[in-house]
Image 1 (tube, helix red, strand yellow):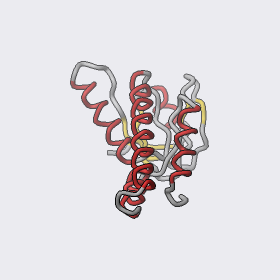
Image 2 (cartoon, rainbow, N blue to C red):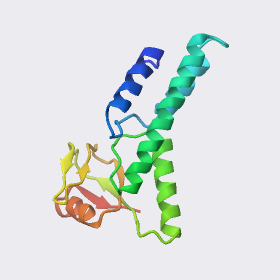
Image 3 (tube, rainbow, N blue to C red):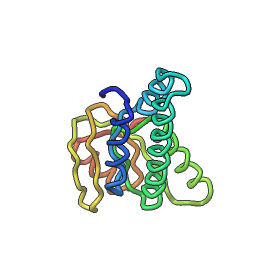
Image 4 (cartoon, rainbow, N blue to C red):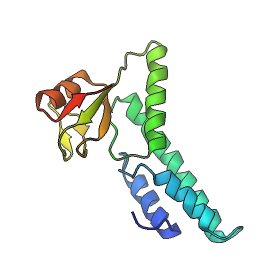
Length: 153
């Protein structure tokens, strides 16, 4: 990933606003933003702008994450670790509150481009050995039956 700059973050924010889908971001995305803020001079415009843009991106992505949960859509990968943790945490709360969403942890056995399952769900792209969480039983069955992944603990 290139250096986190104001222009780089503006580009990401623009891309996020263009689509209702979450764009794939590296697992350490927010850590990289925090590092860029810390490296910028104290009280500088650059520091304030990076911080503000990072917050705007995080808020927009959180809204999209909630939409993904509402419609039981699989999350794109890679995705920031903080978002993945939030997604799992909210799913657990929904399960405890009587919701019927149950996630299954799968390990991808082959690199998979974005695919559309027979039920119409978009999955991927995924890298070999990547851990993913799916809740749609037919999607889980599709991944396993086609030897694209296996259930893991």
